[in-house]
Image 1 (cartoon, rainbow, N blue to C red):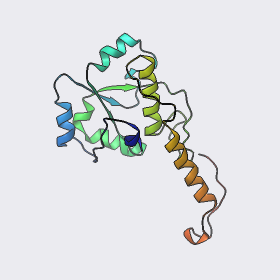
Image 2 (image 1 turned 30 degrees about the vertical axis):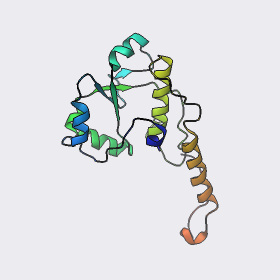
Image 3 (image 1 turned 120 degrees about the horizontal axis):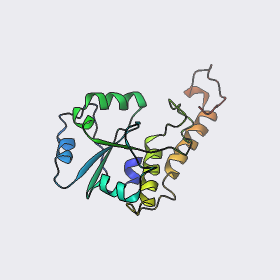
Length: 171
């Protein structure tokens, strides 16, 4: 879903990217800067940096890597991918609550990948480093959640065990 919302993005499937040809090709590009969006205390924090600092940090031709998966899977990807461990890291102070009510986040400040991208794009727009319109960016995500909840609440009993509790409680 995030890929469909972002021009000039690509999906590279895997768990250990250490020897992934495409990832290493991107990392080796001259005059570009590769950055990993990943939570952490010592990261470059987009929320509190000045535009001039952000511009220097991002460089001329930034490539932002996102680890898309469950939180435990993302940790595993980073642990195994020696090349991604070497990247500069950025994060942000989350000021929104995840709308991903059908899936429990490990902590209240955690977001899904698409919500994180939405936040980063808005922070980059505030610093005049991005010009994309994010007004409707989360609509597909919100519609997916609505559909999943509706299906769960109004599903055909043949699709579920008879003991399924039809009460939906957001996580």
